[in-house]
Length: 290
Image (cartoon, rainbow, N blue to C red):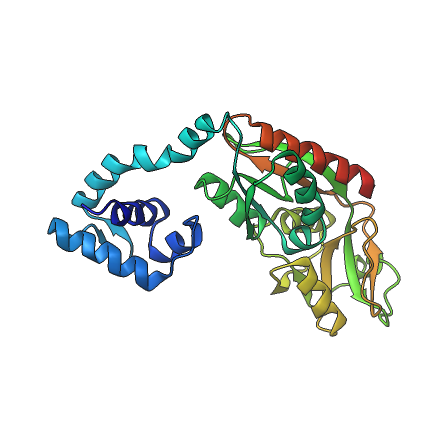
């Protein structure tokens, strides 16, 4: 049996399909190569290991995965033991803004303490990042969080930021209270997807105020929300980040009676020197922003 083919099958089975495997294999390999090599493994064994669409392991695939999973899943742990416990690979998930504006500085500090460190970066919504943590696709996420993490997760609060409304600079609105006083809000509401913590908190507070205003545009990032507001497509829900400069054609309306948005780090698993070092630097960076 070709052990490399077995390794590729392990990643396909672990992550639920060939394309998810491509995104998570820690070395470069494309979808056609994985498909071909797993097909060769199936031909060698004379069985079908999984159904392609929708993905599902066959009984033979379940048996083979149960056999190879303990070996491949513990390779990194074994390598760390031989390396004296020094972690060599750190997988981080965050929003675009955090990855672009804040993470480079943190990584520079961490890599000074852990020379030769390999880093994998993943972008996503908070809910997506939480799912990646649950599937062991990332080691740590920095994102909007709930102050009390769900069972099995740990978290560290880094920043508490005010929620604001973004409006075009030429808008006649002087305060959010003017919107709440209306019988009907005609402007489109632009926000992150409904399952995200920021959107949930905003919607909950609107309900408490007795205001009906439902999202018209769901954007994938805070940057996109700013762009859509800038182009006159509606009013956006965002957070006030210290030191961040809005586009010249956009301004923020305060929401003093709304709950704050919590930015934090979330992770699973045992304590590690690498994670602790990263969290210490993230905490220091957050203090600098206040």
